[in-house]
Image (cartoon, chains in turn cyan, green):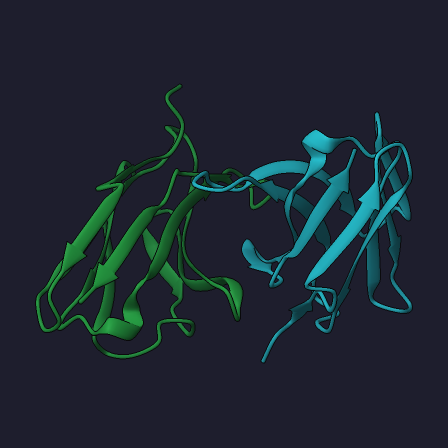
Length: 110
Length: 112
């Protein structure tokens, strides 16, 4: 029972363009959502988050959008840079439980 | 703070042997998580603790897996007996107030 789903295993984007990573969740009890970035041989690192009372949160080149009615969130990276190439995990939190999706591999081509 | 510390970084063991993975969370964090990363399922939550108490172990795949948190600064994940399909990267993470979790570097387990 995957409560957090990232349906795109990979995404390839040209440098300077926008990267959009998507995530769906099924549990209405989740009240906090996060994106993590992971490089090979390293642990995931926190990128950006959003509370369920908001629909948008922005931090530099990264913006997360939340659509509660659709149980959908997305991460926008503008402009994309080669150093953004990594695995991106979507996560949802409720009652201190933190559940992750399967991840999306982002490749930014220069 | 040194962050979340996991040991060992790499473990190679023979099928049937006992394996123990260790984790030291960030001081002051009250939640601790054990995850397993696989290609198919991404970061799979195995178990998590709040204030040293196991809250949800529904992700533990089998009775061969067990986890303990004897105090706020130490946790172990044990696999006994280990099997080749247990080969994966195991991550420990800790958080405060249930928000963003900080991850260790992971333990790459290979069971041959």
